[in-house]
Image (tube, rainbow over all chains, first blue to last red; front, side, top):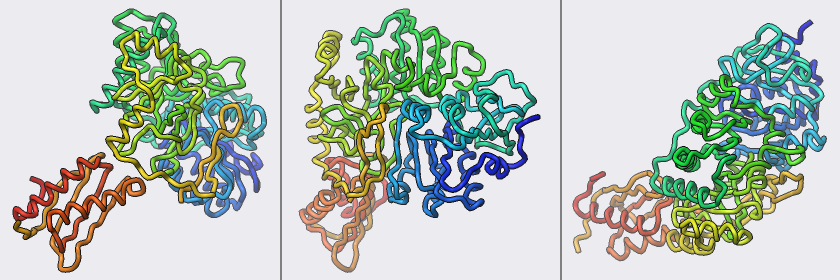
Length: 467
Length: 94
């Protein structure tokens, strides 16, 4: 017996997809993913309608999904993030029901609790055996960790594995195992390697970015958290990566042995592991080839599920043990609320991902952002939409000074003691407005494009159209 | 002041800069603006351009601005250069 079925169409039929079905996808193949489009095109050609798509993230490669929305094949969208091209289509109002944005921790929690049940999970597997044991670590489409796919595999009524590297049973190096899998389909390619992982993620060379990065490293040092056992997460943005580089220099110079690095993992975090800054890496998603190579070969570089990474319902999650997280923002308001969902014109171009999960968990949640971008001040009176509540953000680092959340006076005192230029967030707002002029504010329309659901399941905010 | 205008351009398409072209036309002055901050600053950019042309006594031109989020001081500097080049007999990137 094996679980291999000849065609994707047959697997969709056997899995029982019908009108109104709820299907799910994970995003480790990022902007190189072929699987979501392949499955949705097939479902559309089979004539099904009213499908709910739960995808951990959506990229511009998924634009064909917009057509399935326009013609009624897809009528509900649940995701944690969407990139600008796809977000622009959604911002035009093509979907009648508001998009449900969750966080990388809230998504698996709601799948497990049954808030967002899945009928059929489609799992893109860089390598799978004939019984459905699978891994992302090997194969021509290797992407490393498959952390976001675990809840889908464990909770969906039916699980279809789609692979372009089918191997004999049993696959020894497995992350999700056969106990969850119903069907296995072999296809020519599950993704375009050029879009799956970037060759290298580049550190910024922009002098403003470097000033902010050095300041961020100095803030971490002054916070008192940088000692043996230190744990850390950073995004893959140019300035946050530069901050990690400066932090590494401090750790190596002072002989500080950290405990773990966490999150989406880049080659820079791998370097920190290999040079002894951390005991281990906790990896829910690999961003580049070096991270993929490391998770395949280094036993201290570990794959974790999204629940283990960030679920608010887990008995404990990695984010609960985080000391410091470095995060970005498109806007931050004077109450420290952060927007990472929309751009300066109110168009959707992002999402929380793990932003609000890590901000809630980390002892020090730091936003790194320039005073202004292309004539638009970053600090505003009110963010256009609230992605992460200000109560969970501790510090804003800009090139013109560091603002500390007034709820954290002890932290402000420590930073001042450490020689950091601490300023009031209102001063940063005024400085930016003096430089840029006062922008005419966006006026919200009355159409709800998306609901932002916080990690605890409450409605944090709504994204409206712009008039 | 000599107000003979030849076709000229200045600026770049970099973020936080602007690219501009000025050329004489037969009819009334037209100002064309494409800006990444159209909603927030479009009106003030058009007003600034119109004011600077008027101050220099320049009429019957087409001014096109592709604005990539330039600060007002940058826009002023670019406009000044553009007008200077147009009067010197025109030039592309110097």
